[in-house]
View 1: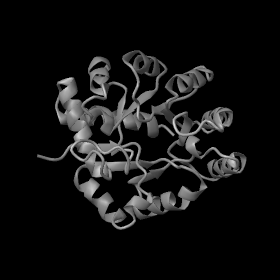
View 2: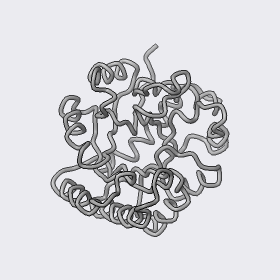
View 3: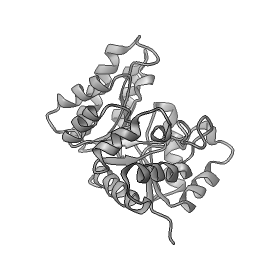
View 4: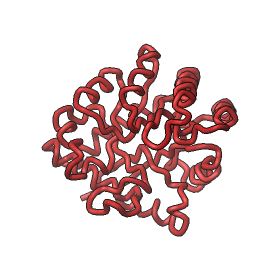
Length: 258
């Protein structure tokens, strides 16, 4: 039986954690049925590695362009100019990874809001989807997206909210990025997905972070996407091929309309 065809909608495959075996790791994922890999940008330091992967794996690795909220520092305006310049000269799969992060450092909290809104505005200008990071800031991210009156489409990456928040995001026409956390015993995310279903779910690993059970605490990689698909099949009472079909179509709905 052929492996289910999957899409990893969020993976940092340019990361130094893959320095020793990057190409082999990607080929391993392809062998496991992962057809495409969507690469979120972090800041100016991640651009070259991301574009190198696009060149090495054409039609497989798709770069995004954005400034991650954890990297909104004193040079945020300079970093934003770089993002703006890249968006002006070539196509990207999405504006991402953007959003708000109130977990690590609140020093630049107001600047994070400014940078987030600016990048959402660019996404509407270029008619690109967005990939939103919302750690300890899901409510705020939802509220900012609502300011754009339905003109924003894309994914709430690493969704970990309540059923009510999931439904609110879905009603906005956005998608829920579900990764390894759904396999964690006490996350509660499995119950949320059981209640809301798969109609607005896409798969992601966030590799090299947040490896699913049975690899929790170790380096994550895109070949582990199958464990997330297996868990979603269990949670929703479907089979993995159905999970693959729905989530792959959802990913296409997000990224392939550019």
